[in-house]
Each structure stands twice: as structure tokens, then as C-alpha cells.
Length: 357
Image 1 (cartoon, rainbow, N blue to C red):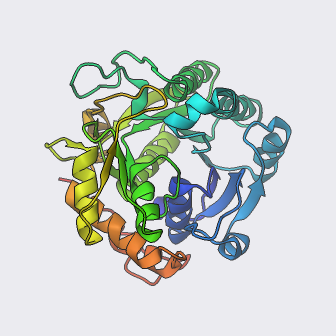
Image 2: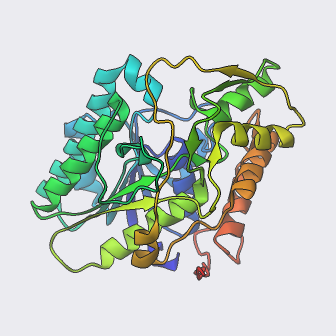
């Protein structure tokens, strides 16, 4: 997106799964990136320490560190903030509820209070989750449906939603983005189906499936990030002194896919077909998650480009190519193709805006 060229953008959680891809995308657009993360990249991370050192103004600390975060925003003066820093796992939230609420709630509160204090005009996108909804009924959730957390993680994200809305009343411009279950290369989290499969594959261990019948809105990572970027652009262009809105982002497939569907498709790309069932949860999880994305389609003309089969194929190919050490050129090429960048990856790219049907 040519719009983002030379814009200063702070990404919290930029060394994580989605944050790493977003950093690469914005670098390709010619943005000036500021990263804030509590973790340095590991061996298999999408971004390498050397790349970050060369191309990003990087800070390492917890999002709960109000003093440092305030100094970063004060000194770097970002035009945009994409707030991805989080404890993102449901099962981890049962084990570490205090840490989950500290990061997801207090971290978000810190960020928005600092924005209110320093510069209310920063366009801020707060990433939450599809799990903020009560999904006992099988239906596509809309943004105005009831929010009801059944676990510490989803409850913490509902808190972040309410904090964001309350701070819009104090004069800031903020949007919350509720995406489905995001899949793509570069995710090495524990207790997520794709990286769990890959770890078992690499280590030649049995592949274990938790809750095979649970349905999820599997959304490809580049589709999700394009949606975030389009929301950021639109928010930046809104002239009012305060603004708040929430948007769902979900795949465009009519068919719903469960954990077993994803597993079988993924294993086919690995030439494997053996797996084990394990239905013993540490804590309760939603059995059915599905979103209605009509609102964002009307707001910024976004829809997911990548169908389920394509998303699984892209993800599997990334891991097959990068299962020992991430090859940055592979990911760069994929971004270039997705966003129709017609020049070699650099800071002077020409981005052709994609028109969605």
C-alpha cells in the first residue's frame, strides 16, 4: 500500500507470529517501523535479530512497563500503532491467568492512556479475538452480539475491547479487530494445531489432535494483516477528534471447517495420514466459532482472498521450506506476490491496490 510509505508505525508484539509478518509487509511498503516486544527472535522465527537490527528501531520490554512504553511513544512519535502484544493462548490463560490479564488488560490500558496523554491523533488498531463472543449457538457472530468470555483469555480480550471503547470517549481514535483463528507460516506457539503438527512431524512423533470436532474460522495470516492495514488507513483518514469501532475478520468460505478437516488437509501436504485423538482439555473452550464479516467489507472493501485449501497449502509449504531455519527471501517473495508488488523487495516498491469483488 503506497499509503504507508514513509509513515512511522509502532508495532507492539512485532517479533511474534503476526507481528513478524506485519513488520515484513510494512517494510516492503517503505514504512518506518518501530518494534516493541518482550521477546527476542528465536532460531526458527520469521524475523532474525540481524534483520531487525538493520531495518527496525527495536525495543525489548514488557507491554506492562508504562515508563518505557511512554518514552518510546514520546520519542518516536508514531503515526500509527498496531497493538498485537498479548498472551494469545486459551490454555495458557488457565495456567497463568494473572499474567494473561496483566499483559492483555493492563498492557492495553497502558498503551491507550499514553496515547491520550501524548497524542490523541495516533491511529490505533487493537487486535482482540473472535473468542470474545458467546458461541453456544451455531451462528455467524456479528459485532453487536453479546460479548461473553468463558475463559481467562477471552475475558481479558473483552476487557481490552471495553477499555478501547472507553478511551474513544476520552478523545482518541481506535478500532478493535476481531479475527478468526489465523494460520500461516512462522507460528511456533505451543497448543496451536499447526505448529503442534509441525513439531511432531520434525521430531518424528505421533501427531495428537485436541478437540477434532471443534469448528473454527481459519483465516490466512496475510488476509488478516491486509484487513488490519486497511482499517488503519481508514482510521487515519477519519477527521473526527475521537472514534471507535469494532470489526470481524473471517474467511470467505461458505463451508465451515473443524480441527480434523484442517489436520487432514495439512497432513496431506506432509505425506502423512496418521494422528491420535486427545479430547482432554485443561479448561473449557468454545466448540463452535464463526464470524460475519459484512461490516468490514462495507467499511474498507476487505474480504479474505485466500480459500481454506489455499491457506493450508501456503502454510504447509512455508513449514516444509523453513522447518529448520526461516528463509526470509521465501516469505518476502510470498508477500510480494500477495500484495502485487511489482519490484524487488526494497523501500521503494510500487504497490498495486487489489480490488475485491
